Image (cartoon, rainbow over all chains, first blue to last red; front, side):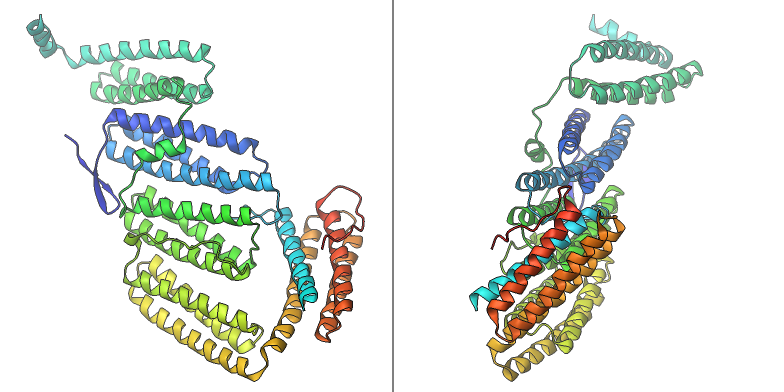
Amino acid sequence: MKLPVKLGAMTKSIPNRKEILSRLAQLEILLCRLQDELLVCEHKNTVVQDCIDRADKTLKSAVQKLGRGDFESATHLANVIFLRLNFGKQLMVAEILESEIGESEFLQLTELDATHESILAASFARSDRIIREFIEQCKSK
Amino acid sequence: MEWVRKIETYFVTPKVSTHKALDLLVATISETNKVVEITQSTFKNRALAHLTLAEEQYDLALKHFQQGEYTACQRQIELSSTHLQMAQLLLDGQSEVEIDSIAAVFDFPKDSTEYLLNHLLESIARTKLIVESGNLHVSQKAQDILFETVKVAKQSLSALKNDEIEDARHFCVAALLLLTRVCALLSIDNRQSPWQVDFPEAAVDEPVARVRHLLREMTTCLNLIADAGIVNSAKIERHFKEAEEHLGESITAIMEAEFYLVENAVIAALSELDLVRQLAAHSASATEPDDRNVLFSAERSFKALEAESSKIVRIAQKVAVRDFRIFQRRIDSALVYFGRAAFQFKGDNLPEALRLATAAYLDLDFAWQIALTTAKPEYRDADF
């Protein structure tokens, strides 16, 4: 018999032990791959690293909960791990694109993410744009 | 015979059954150890970490067994075997696992907090992707609100992890509203609509609908004053800032589940926007549109470059940019040239304005090379 699990405002049946174990193993594999992708990425996005670190910590708790037979908590934590890894993965797509394009505009997601160099580069990019816009106006008037 | 086995099971004591489980566990640990030693799996280290934890749990189980604590021992065995199973699953190597395939497993119900949060996080990532791919201009204001959005999204995730579902939901909705504001600013700054933040139905209740209405009104109002070219009016700026503060109050009220405060904050903000509209209409009728645009462009551009220049010098000093004195002279010179260009622009001396602005650009590019490259700086041809 499957028991109800609180999932936000919804109730959903709890997966069995084998299913939860399989989910956690798949999440751990994704976590490893995301870490590998970040290692080779030119810009080490601190938000992605934070997603990985926190997902790793939550994964350890989830395995503990599963080992102690608390399937509901393990399922809930697996959901949280997925949310963190999915976010990290989506951000990596943008990071990889940014490395490929190599344009000057770079969207920082946290203040930690903003190194002095990146702030300087962004400020130069804005100045460049201001002058270009001005020149366009001179030409078009 | 089946009945003999049943009787045997019936008479098996906790000590015997626990002993059997321990034997089985130690055999499995040993077997997994052998596999880990020879495996070429990418996930070998992670499997090894689980194996180490399984061994630690086994040691604890053994201690409980020696002290006759069979229930506690069985709990440790269960935990140890969970780590072993994780190690084995990792070694089995499901390297083809992709986020898209696993997303089907985590198919959250549409009105769950998990669904909303996933939607929020994907929307933040999408915004980043659109800005990077379109090389969109990001103003300091949009950047600051985005920092706040990500901070609140992280609070939502932490609340969800701690099983504080309602708090997680409020944080999540607040972050979605903040992100809507970021996207509105991006669209105004870049004179194009990069994309609209989609609000899942489950996230829209009465207070949220009110704030969304306010956000739309603010965007319309900003477009109106930008089109009219009268942003540098102190009165308009003051009232718009007041409206922004009330918007902030309404979002904070949603975050803190004080929904009764939302209505008043939104009404106050809308009143400020009405004043902004009236002032804008008055300014628009006072001057010819073409003249206003001319004044606005030149002055606003100079002020913006002045602000960026002082920021550039401040940070360059912090990071100890090479040849700092030359660097600073080039930045100062760029600003002087640009100031003169703005003056000539206002006087309608466009060829001179163009020449001076180009000179400013060349100095800025020279400074850029000093700060952000290792090559010897040189005056390069402008690419416009």
